Length: 192
Image (cartoon, rainbow, N blue to C red):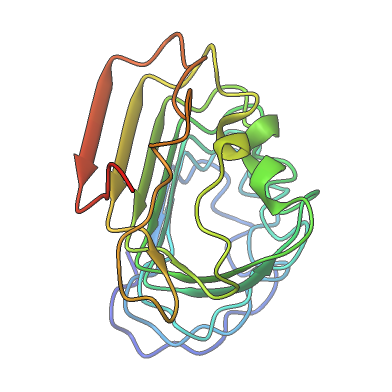
């Protein structure tokens, strides 16, 4: 655990000799990039990048983490999420994803980002600020119909409106999530 160590950079391959490492927490640091940091960490199962507000996660930065099961992206400025390779490498193993209180600009294809996470069982979206006003779309769940068992939606905001918005009034917003066993809705507007 490297928590609150005031780290603003980690050299690529810095953990290469720790091939059996299972958990890595970089909470409350000042990291700006993680490019090349995870080389040689194919066995890593848990990664927490909480409270690194200037961190930019590039396409393929997570790719070496072939066995990553739990990823926490809390209190980050994730920038623009496009469809495609954000979860490259972790897409087949990732079971738990926490997007909590992060700034996100939704780019083209971003709502299909999770579709490749075919093992995702737990998804937490709390206080996620969509800076383009897009709101949460039904298509975010595409591809998760048979694997997602736990979903927590709490205070999903559209910037500028200051009100929670998850379009659950849209017919069938959660339909198709056949494996869902636990649903938590907090501070979510349920109607017009």
